[in-house]
Amino acid sequence: MENLSNIWQEAADHLLQTLPEAKKQWIKRISFESEENGAMVLSLSSNFYKETTEKNCRADIENTVSEIAGHDIQIVFTVNTAKKATAKTIQKTVKKEKTEPVSKNTTLNKQYSFDNFISGDNSSFAFNACKVIAQNPGTSFNPCLIYGGVGLGKTHLLESIGNYIDEHNPKMKIIYTTAESFTNEFIDSLLSKEKISSFKAKYRSVDVLLIDDIHFLQKKDSTQEELFHTFNELYDSHKQIVLTCDRPITELTDITDRLKTRFRKGLNVDLQPPAYETRMAIAMQKCREKGYEIDQKVLEYICQNVNTNVRDLEGALTTLSSFATLVGKPVTLDIAKEQLKNFIVSPAIKNSDISIDMIIHSTAAYFNVKEYDIRGKSRNKNITLARHISIYLASELTSYSLSEIGKMMNGKDHTTIMYSVEKIKSILDTDDSVRQAVNTIKSELLQS
Image (cartoon, rainbow, N blue to C red):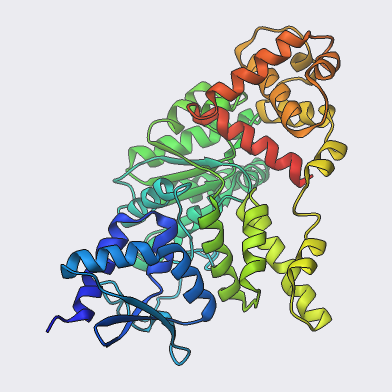
């Protein structure tokens, strides 16, 4: 008689290797429960997980299990509330308990780890690269630059690297800091020779340097000079350097070329806004971590409509949970729509609230160009791209006609405006840097 438990183990291993990241989150929650009249009974820890897994993964599971068994096997999902779905792991390795050493790296936020980062198609490359870096600091992908819009997980991955290294190599000296803090420390150190020596010794003696938001260094020439020498010292000593930025390094216009060259030496990876399935997995994890009780239909509504970034998604969940706690009743779909009207921007609200001036201002800030240059006739490559993106976003986010947009862009004709819109549309799917710019600027506009 065939052993359905072994068949499930093999099927689960195969599914975890072949399914998209978003679906893997559901497979990991399943436990083999029993065999009943030839059917395979699989359990999950709640009705929500059961219904969502059936909806998203039943066909994948049935096909894989039947293929391994050599004949059709019926799959039955059940809820086992007496244990958590993680009680029986479907992975072959078991984590051994160990006493965590007291960390000397007090700048790290321990809430960030690889275990609680939900990786989807938008972030799997960056996620896997960061894990490799953490496992082999100073030898793989050094330096590494992670770039992407606000709220997409750059800081989470950066600090996860530090926390992983701190746990597995506690003797390593790790510094996590922001570019703003690095700048302020450097300015303070200029007050005396002792302070500048101490500053240099601090940053040039680390094993792992993690710097968040390096776009803040633009136009800060002296700080860039100091970071350049710090970078060289660490790189030549095979120390790990990981940086984050809100855009590709090539789009930072006020960073010196020699520093850009250093940043480009290693691996540059981007983070994109998560797809619906990944947003659902993230929302479920946030609810589990914080004890939120939100109906599945409400979660689906949130994840279908809040599609800018993870930070907004978490904000929507917190808003609804707070409402339920204060009012003392569960959140219905109608209540969710009312409470989240500031998170979920309808086309009508977009048309009335976002102006072309706002679009040009945000685009100019992103590309570090003058607003009047975007409206003007400059043929500078960076300014031309900013102009095309401004016009494209104006057509997407406002109710103005192309002719009206042209009038507000210093009298540009309809044909010129149409060209800019089509130009951006044609390269959005093929040019990562343009897609990143459009997504970041749009996200900032919608949040404002």
